[in-house]
Image: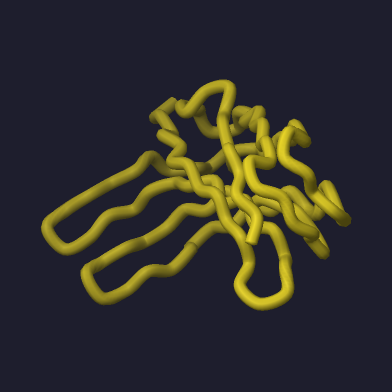
Length: 117
């Protein structure tokens, strides 16, 4: 199972902005596909669902060694809503990096604050 260090140039964005991300390999492995998704997640005490998913597509396949790193981008939708929270749940944005591996996939996740226009 791989371990990643996932970082964004900025953790805040406006609708339509392009997020610039960097991922470094901390612990290696082999991947059938390294990709990321920007997700708008609805979460309650008993439920979690991604209402909007913006994929990057696969940007690397093969063995991963500690010290390797990649940069990638993903665009925030032009109609993106800011995060919201209330008494019964919340809506928020997250960048989810996934390595497709045999067995359980490896992930790294960071929150993104989408600002109002």
